[in-house]
Length: 571
Ligand code: FES
Ligand code: MG
Image (cartoon, rainbow, N blue to C red):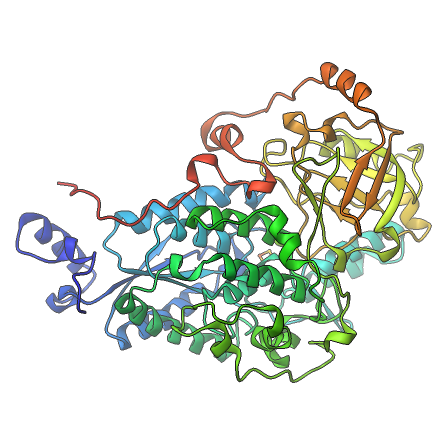
């Protein structure tokens, strides 16, 4: 190594502090030469049995460590807060920022020269990248990989996507509770994260599209030996990245984010990528706005035929060629000069990619939609923006005027939606309030609220729904999300009343509440802010300092890169 590495400020020298740092590390079995100036690679592990999507990481990390050792580095694994989507309440998103603080401080405070970020389940990827971006050391992402396809009664079923369908089928009376139970065991049949193009697969794809992971990272199943080899190569590569001082800020440029946004349109990626990429950009100090999502993504065709937008699953995507093949298909829309963790450009990384299955990765002219990007809507109902995902929506509802049926909170929704006397039909617009960053708190994935049972029984399967919430990346429907400002801070959403008319016009990016300004001011004067039921602690801090969705829902004081200067000694 030609320069003195940061870890040598701990491990180099003959003073009392170096004695302390080395001596205690030696109880791990490390010999003297482990501290000779070789790169120390932190392996940031989100393993947890409470995050089942990441529960296989012990094996993966062994491969990463072997790779680091082979390349002459010293691997040191450390655990961080693991945001598991399926168990954490009230929502894993509430803890994304907390986990990012854990990651940032663990990296900066320790003798680390480069970091492998080991992530899988939805929020684990952004929380690790956000924390690492605030430090800006050489860093590389490896994803845990998706589960094998679900298999139920002779057909493939997808994580999340089929849960929403099955649960509506049960409520509509067309699926038996016994089949529902059987499907539960058939859906998750191997280690790995959701194998639809949900948020986990989307964020693994975003990591690859941004240039933060080795090519192929997004799609290899968790149990595929390709994944283990990729982990090994990731371990080797981070050691070289330290030698090259190739840092996150060299990779996370505005052009890289533009590429990722376009790739998100091409893969029909999760709406959650919007808040995560905005938050990551904020950490590294790259300019990125909500409107950039529309600007860069607007005319990108959705060519990946995966649930929830299409028919197939991640295993099929892998065999079709994975993300490099998708990027190759839309390479005219990408900036191919962006630098990546390979030390080569995106263009070089995808040069030899091939599409092996044109039903899974569709030709451009057969795209699921030609306007696959996330649409950013504005109007008096969302002055700071709202979003909708056209590839998951019903074409006939993309321009729609309807009567609002309003739910003041998620509890109000639950108590009211199946009331047989609820005055609602399929032309109405369901409006849900107080589910945003501060309101829920944590901006839960409740925006794709289930339709009233009486309409499901009539065969209705989609309606326009509007909220300040998010929705699962595995979900679908004509669902307007992330309305900002949210209801809990007095956004116009808080003022919508039953019977008001709302206009949605996705083509013209419009979301309008047909109530005049004078009436809105009268309603605003009467509006009473909900009192958050917060016991203090982290959740109290979160509600006080969280920013709105259009700013990525990060905590305001976490924005920015605070670097990796060596902190002062502890003794
Ligand atoms: Fe972990 Fe879907 S619940 S990825
Ligand atoms: Mg999810």
